[in-house]
Picture 1 (tube, one colour):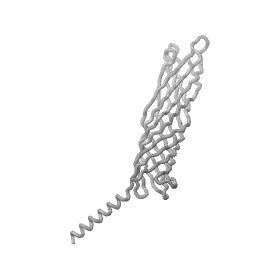
Picture 2 (cartoon, rainbow, N blue to C red):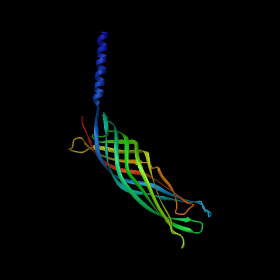
Picture 3 (tube, rainbow, N blue to C red):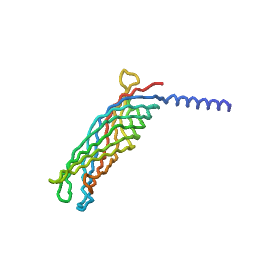
Picture 4 (tube, one colour):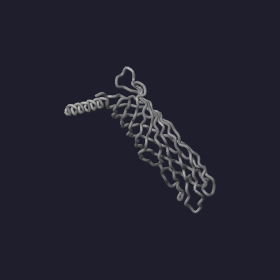
Length: 249
């Protein structure tokens, strides 16, 4: 009798384990995306003097805001358990973002207040991301989800400035650039639903946010003793739409 009880218990456990494994369904996926991005940030310009005539440093803070489009590819793997979805994805997005913003800064050069024309160009090329996705099917075939992970970005800052000095003096010019590679956090929310009449194809709409990091550079002007430091920082807000094909095994 004891042997029958043990056998029955083991059989029940094995059947329960098999049923649980059957509830887990996994698949690979591949997709394309397009996004509208707005870049909210700031541009800081500091001018310091180390010369016989030594006026106080001049500091300027300006907005550096722009908008643009990007497109990308994504791939990954996901599993479903009951109404839950768990996935991991790699994506690459091409921004090709090149925005120039012009400012006029009035700088005290000791003998007079001189207006300086500044052109700051902020560039972003390609983002590489690795993220996790967790969703829940609240309605048949409709899955809201959250996304979190890391993205690797490269920002570049070019600055050209010119101050027109009084007659008899050469123009005061500055040209400097720097680039910054950084790994940043990315987070977002979205929803996914199947495309009618095409098996395996789904449509996603989501919002993502990437906080900014500073890109800094320093350079001398065209006269000794005048040092210019510039920095930019931009946050990326993204509205993204994706078509994703889910491969069945």
